[in-house]
Amino acid sequence: MDYRLSEELKMLKDMAYKFAKNEMAPLSSECDENETYTPEIRKKAAELGLIASWLPEEYGGAGFGVFGNAIITEEISRVDMGIGLNIVVASFGCEAIYHFGTEEQKKKYLPPVCRGEMVSAGAFTEPNAGTDVSGIGTRAVKDGSDYVINGSKMFITNGTICDFMVVLAITNPDAPKRHDRFSMILVPSDLPGITKTKIKGKLGIRASDTAEIAFEDVRVPQENLIGQEGRGFHQVMHFFDMTRVMVAAQGIGISQGCLDTAIRYAKERKAFGTSIGNFQLNQAKLAEMAIRIESLRNMVYKAAWLFDQDTPDYTLSAMAKFLGGQTAVFCANAALEIHGGYGYIAEYEVQKWYRDAKILELYEGTKEAEILTIAKVLMK
Ligand SMILES: Cc1cc2nc3c(=O)[nH]c(=O)nc-3n(C[C@H](O)[C@H](O)[C@H](O)COP(=O)(O)OP(=O)(O)OC[C@H]3O[C@@H](n4cnc5c(N)ncnc54)[C@H](O)[C@@H]3O)c2cc1C
Image (cartoon, rainbow, N blue to C red; front, side, top):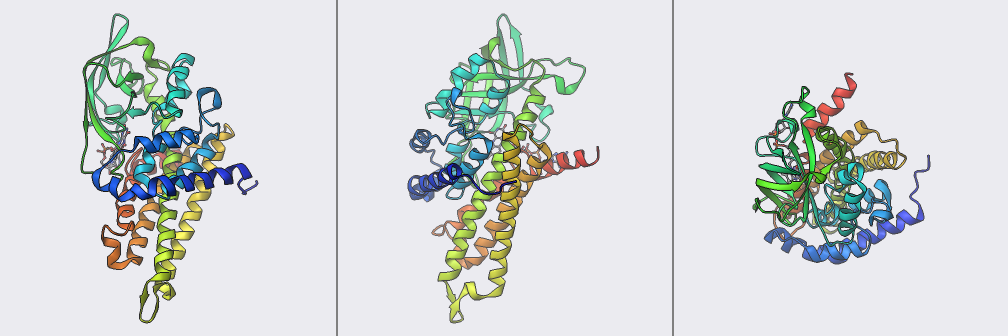
């Protein structure tokens, strides 16, 4: 096994980092404070092929595969996870269209997302059902040639700014097996009956749009079904198998950003007549951050690489997602501590990273949910 990045991937990594530094960093604290969404940055990223870069060229992507996309996600999250999400999840939901959609759906929806002209969302969580995906209540009932959708979704990333959503709804309430009751449906977000309400006041990733969405008698043609009717739950689980690797890659990025900043600060800050970086207790923190980041990076790269070989290891993806959240939270905490009191104030970026990191243990499966997934395989 060759652990070196190819020249092409090295260039991609460098380009993504420079883009993030030049375009995102200057707006970081302003967007965090004002909860500003950044469509201009998303469009610039699209011009460089950074959006949904894992998609093959025939659907508008750059064809970098899951590995290449993980590297882009890492470098962008190394600078700002909140603004970064406007790029790395501008295509959230498209994974399902690519894997299960019809050729017509793929041709219609995927290229405009890659070009930065459209944004997608994946609407699965509901006010009363998050971890328990099969507890959702949104219904899609057949009426003539349409589905009529009623229900509500909670915490939907890109919710108020998306052009279309991949919605999980109950279509077969009487199916004998609970998990066979659901379907995924592609829903344009400007249809009558859809109400989108932005959720304000998030702890972190404040530049990322999050919304509650209500569906009241929303009509979509039955041809908007993604994949097979009754397979929605299974398709969502498959969807998360891939997106988990990307969340884990966000974890590498933010953790590396914390380490870079903490090293810089430790060299500059003086106490007791020397740099605080000379104190072994601080060095131990920096070393442990580096060890954890390198372990995470190896795990994520392996999980991503296996996807590109068509031999995905879903348990490894769940492990990577778990480790990604844990590493990010650890590194943000350690970086803040190394900054002492200055880590606690808005002037220093590390306080924002401390707030941003926590989401990695919550969305796309809580850390507890990842443990359950891994344990289930172990106990088979
Ligand atoms: C900023 C943000 C963005 C998000 N983006 C999206 C999005 O784009 N699309 C989307 O569909 N969702 C999205 N989510 C939702 C997110 O995936 C859910 O919040 C998450 O899955 C947890 O669900 P919940 O909040 O309902 O918590 P619950 O499921 O109610 O869990 C509460 C607690 O109980 C624990 N728990 C639950 N079940 C078990 C169990 N069986 N055993 C042990 N512990 C358990 C959980 O781990 C957690 O600690 C987003 C959330 C946030 C905060």
